[in-house]
Length: 307
Image (cartoon, rainbow, N blue to C red):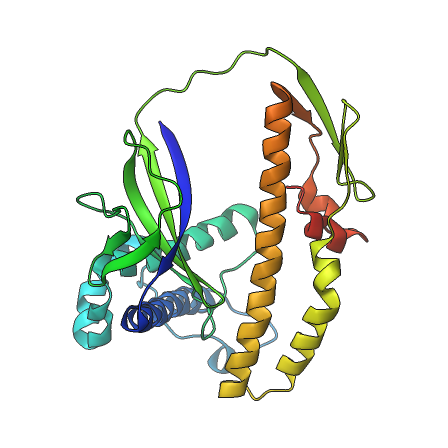
C-alpha cells in the first residue's frame, strides 16, 4: 500500500470562503466543548489536600463514565437538536474534529505531557473530509459536500492508479489549499543497495556538505526577514484585539510567516532533488533534532529545519 499527499492551491469564491470559515468555527466550538467535558471529568476525580473541595473541585456523579471518543461521537445527533448550527457542517467533518481531540488526548497519555489546549478564535484552520463515493477532483475543480465545485490549480495530475481517500482543506494566511490523500494498493519492494553512495553532513555554518565535496551554504530564511517580522509584530501588539485594524495587521504577519515557510520548503525540495539526481544512495546522520532544537542554537536549528 502506497500513500501519498498532494497539495494544491484552491480558489473558493466569497460565499464558499464564508461557509468554510463558519464551519471551522463550528468545529472549533465542538472541539472545545469536548475538551471541557474531559477536563471536568478529570477535575472531579482528584482532590487537592490544601484546597476545600467545595470551592475547588467539580461535583460530578461517581457513576459518570469518562467522555470517551465513542461517547462523544454518539452524542452528536442529540447535540444537533439542541444546537441547530451543528447541522450546517457535514456530519463526517464534525466527527473528525472530535477524533482530532482524542488523538491529542491519547498522545498526552502516551507521553505524559502536552495536555490538549482550547482552540482560540481563528485558530482552527483546517477541515477534513474523510470519505468520498467517487473521485472529487477534475481537471479544474474539486467537489466538496454542501460546498460544490471549487476551482483548483491541478499543477500535477493525480496518477490513474491512485484513489482519493480524503481531502483536508487548509487556510494559511489568506490563501486556501487542498491536501489530497491518495492511495494505491500495490506492494513496493525494498530497494537493494546499489550504485554511487553519497554521505551527507549537516551543520549551521554550512547547511550541508557531501562526500563528493559539494557544500551548500546556510539559507537563514528567518534571520533575513526577522527585522521586518519584528516590526510587524510590534505593530500588531498595539492593536485592539478583534478590531478591524488588528485583523488586517494579523494577516500581514501571517503572510510573512507563510512566505518564510514556502521559501524554506522550496529550498529543501531543490536540495533533496539535487541529491537524488547525483547519487543512488544517500546516507545521513541519525541525529535527535528535537533535543538539538532546545539548546542555545535552537532558533537557528529550527530555521534550518533539518528534520
